[in-house]
Image (tube, rainbow, N blue to C red; front, side, top):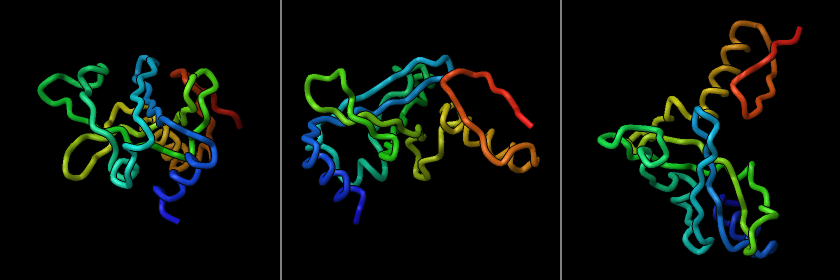
Length: 138
Protein backbone atom coordinates (compact mmCIF):
# COMPACT_ATOMS: atom_id res chain seq x y z
CA UNK A 1 0.00 0.00 0.00
CA UNK A 2 1.38 3.43 -0.94
CA UNK A 3 2.07 6.15 1.62
CA UNK A 4 -0.77 8.32 0.34
CA UNK A 5 -3.22 5.40 0.42
CA UNK A 6 -2.26 4.57 4.02
CA UNK A 7 -2.43 8.24 4.98
CA UNK A 8 -5.87 8.81 3.42
CA UNK A 9 -7.16 5.59 5.01
CA UNK A 10 -6.00 6.71 8.47
CA UNK A 11 -7.49 10.16 7.94
CA UNK A 12 -10.81 8.63 6.94
CA UNK A 13 -10.89 6.15 9.83
CA UNK A 14 -9.86 8.71 12.48
CA UNK A 15 -11.61 11.79 11.08
CA UNK A 16 -8.32 13.67 10.61
CA UNK A 17 -8.81 17.10 9.02
CA UNK A 18 -5.30 18.62 9.21
CA UNK A 19 -1.66 17.54 9.02
CA UNK A 20 0.70 19.52 11.28
CA UNK A 21 4.33 19.39 10.14
CA UNK A 22 6.85 20.04 12.94
CA UNK A 23 10.57 20.76 13.08
CA UNK A 24 12.90 21.86 15.86
CA UNK A 25 15.74 24.33 15.37
CA UNK A 26 19.15 24.17 17.05
CA UNK A 27 17.93 26.44 19.87
CA UNK A 28 15.16 23.96 20.66
CA UNK A 29 12.33 26.08 19.28
CA UNK A 30 9.49 24.07 17.78
CA UNK A 31 8.21 25.35 14.42
CA UNK A 32 5.21 24.03 12.57
CA UNK A 33 3.16 24.35 9.42
CA UNK A 34 -0.41 23.05 9.26
CA UNK A 35 -2.11 22.02 6.02
CA UNK A 36 -5.59 20.62 5.31
CA UNK A 37 -5.65 16.87 4.61
CA UNK A 38 -7.20 17.60 1.21
CA UNK A 39 -3.94 19.27 0.13
CA UNK A 40 -1.77 16.30 1.09
CA UNK A 41 -0.64 14.42 -2.01
CA UNK A 42 1.88 11.66 -2.73
CA UNK A 43 4.26 14.45 -3.79
CA UNK A 44 3.89 16.17 -0.39
CA UNK A 45 4.62 12.91 1.44
CA UNK A 46 7.62 12.05 -0.76
CA UNK A 47 9.11 15.45 -1.59
CA UNK A 48 7.81 17.68 1.19
CA UNK A 49 6.27 21.10 1.58
CA UNK A 50 8.29 24.17 0.72
CA UNK A 51 8.92 26.88 3.29
CA UNK A 52 11.14 29.90 3.79
CA UNK A 53 13.98 28.80 6.06
CA UNK A 54 14.84 32.41 6.92
CA UNK A 55 11.44 32.85 8.53
CA UNK A 56 12.28 29.96 10.84
CA UNK A 57 15.81 31.20 11.54
CA UNK A 58 17.36 28.27 9.65
CA UNK A 59 19.08 30.23 6.86
CA UNK A 60 19.85 33.64 5.42
CA UNK A 61 17.23 35.17 3.13
CA UNK A 62 19.24 34.78 -0.08
CA UNK A 63 19.51 30.98 0.28
CA UNK A 64 16.52 29.98 2.34
CA UNK A 65 14.30 27.73 0.21
CA UNK A 66 13.75 24.51 2.15
CA UNK A 67 11.26 21.68 2.42
CA UNK A 68 9.71 19.76 5.31
CA UNK A 69 9.34 16.06 4.53
CA UNK A 70 6.92 14.41 6.96
CA UNK A 71 7.88 11.30 8.89
CA UNK A 72 4.44 9.73 9.27
CA UNK A 73 5.83 7.12 11.67
CA UNK A 74 5.96 9.92 14.27
CA UNK A 75 2.32 10.89 13.67
CA UNK A 76 0.08 11.36 16.70
CA UNK A 77 -3.33 12.97 17.08
CA UNK A 78 -2.92 16.39 18.73
CA UNK A 79 -5.26 16.37 21.76
CA UNK A 80 -5.26 20.18 22.01
CA UNK A 81 -6.70 20.98 18.58
CA UNK A 82 -10.38 21.60 17.99
CA UNK A 83 -10.28 19.94 14.56
CA UNK A 84 -8.71 16.49 14.52
CA UNK A 85 -5.06 17.06 13.57
CA UNK A 86 -2.32 14.55 12.89
CA UNK A 87 0.95 16.00 14.15
CA UNK A 88 4.26 14.60 12.91
CA UNK A 89 7.91 15.52 12.88
CA UNK A 90 9.67 16.25 9.64
CA UNK A 91 13.14 16.10 8.22
CA UNK A 92 14.38 19.39 6.82
CA UNK A 93 15.88 19.36 3.35
CA UNK A 94 17.32 21.96 1.02
CA UNK A 95 15.13 22.80 -1.97
CA UNK A 96 17.81 21.71 -4.44
CA UNK A 97 17.50 18.99 -7.06
CA UNK A 98 18.96 16.36 -4.72
CA UNK A 99 16.85 17.38 -1.69
CA UNK A 100 20.00 17.26 0.48
CA UNK A 101 19.44 17.08 4.24
CA UNK A 102 19.81 20.43 5.98
CA UNK A 103 22.97 20.09 8.09
CA UNK A 104 21.43 21.88 11.11
CA UNK A 105 18.26 19.79 11.15
CA UNK A 106 18.21 18.44 14.71
CA UNK A 107 16.93 15.06 13.55
CA UNK A 108 19.82 14.88 11.07
CA UNK A 109 22.32 15.82 13.80
CA UNK A 110 21.01 12.99 15.99
CA UNK A 111 21.12 10.46 13.13
CA UNK A 112 24.73 11.37 12.30
CA UNK A 113 25.75 11.23 15.97
CA UNK A 114 24.19 7.78 16.38
CA UNK A 115 25.94 6.54 13.23
CA UNK A 116 29.26 7.80 14.63
CA UNK A 117 28.66 6.02 17.95
CA UNK A 118 28.06 2.77 16.06
CA UNK A 119 31.05 3.27 13.77
CA UNK A 120 33.38 3.91 16.70
CA UNK A 121 32.01 0.90 18.59
CA UNK A 122 30.88 3.07 21.49
CA UNK A 123 27.21 2.12 21.41
CA UNK A 124 24.77 0.01 19.41
CA UNK A 125 21.77 2.14 20.27
CA UNK A 126 21.09 5.66 21.49
CA UNK A 127 18.09 7.51 22.88
CA UNK A 128 17.65 11.19 22.09
CA UNK A 129 15.65 13.89 23.80
CA UNK A 130 14.94 17.49 22.95
CA UNK A 131 18.01 18.97 24.67
CA UNK A 132 21.59 19.15 23.46
CA UNK A 133 23.11 17.01 26.14
CA UNK A 134 23.78 13.32 26.25
CA UNK A 135 25.08 10.50 28.40
CA UNK A 136 27.10 7.49 27.38
CA UNK A 137 26.52 4.33 29.40
CA UNK A 138 28.72 1.28 29.37
